[in-house]
Length: 559
Image (cartoon, rainbow, N blue to C red; front, side):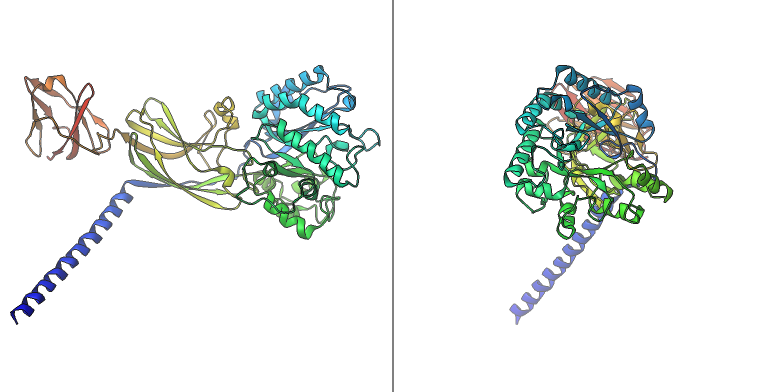
């Protein structure tokens, strides 16, 4: 009987302990949750409907030049494009005079001069080469051997100017470089003809740096040239493989039910193209009025489906004016390519140098497409007092910020160890990958938000300030080796610190935000008296530093 009573008492006691532990655990979780929320701020951003001059997208301007009389680009004309919301142009280099000979050095030099002007204007270019702007037999293109030789000639120019080349169209074959009316590659291509076409595209891909894509005129031409009807998968995307670097352009968009031969079988090619263009460059031009297909409804629907990044502003003028008259021009202008809109951000109020700082950003892509060229995203911390900036690359890839999707980006950003403690404004920056262009704001991506863009820096203001301190000043790990006395505890108007050789140490006081506070003090032998009268009640950290030796003590002030 006695044993039974004892067991019952033990069971009851254990149950009570378990209940108490559960309550303590719940209280701790709630406390930590409250503390965490109290240390973060959520900023909400206002969307903008303005037209934005972002790089590698939008309505483009068509330009061309011929070998018989090279027509150079005008710097003043290029400079004026940006004022009219244009950041992209197509440059067709016609090589009529060189069908049977090398490209002249004068022509190549003129090409480089054009590229220099494009760069100076802050624009990017779609490049195409062709041998004829008519379909006259015998003048349409050059032999495969001559084409491959010309590709090798222009390779140095492609490499030198990769920074401003947005994408390259396959060109070379057929009238206008559009791969149909051809003298050397088969109007009804045989297996051999497709093999020859593949050699040309492979030659372009080899000459063009791996960071850039090539576009082919129709979906079936890519399928037959590379022997696959399977569309790119997410796993293949941006892999650097040739098949992943080949995109599409449609130069008779909306002109007929097949877009004048762009499609052979809509039921299979539409799904194929929709999937492919999630990960490759897509663009082109209209070429004929074909109502109702060439009207706003179909145009917007198919640009959405096929992820259009650019469209010719100059052709077809009647189709473009129809967009303007029927009130979809502005929508198309805004949505061509990517259009990133910051929704909100959850950001910490404090952070430690060299430690992880958690951030969460919500960004919506309201454009038709994602960027097709690589670009990194940086969190920029700018010191509120000195203007000194520190940039930290995020892991997210904006090429995967899919059209029509709101991305939630959650990362732990490790702050640089060489930062100086203080108050920092936060910015988001998506600069060009090229080192020279990365410092030019016109080549950075602007978010579609009100009052967030800094036109002089290319930064997007996150509208938040974080207080950054040293790890020791924020009370991480404290190792006590100095034998000292600190009194009274808590301090009121004065605090006394005593230890041997205190005069050899630099003494600093920090508040809970990691901000250094200035206090008057008196030093007498091994005793220092700090005047704490002006401090608010709270917890402070006193740091003692002597060469490589650093130690921190936590103190309390109560008035």
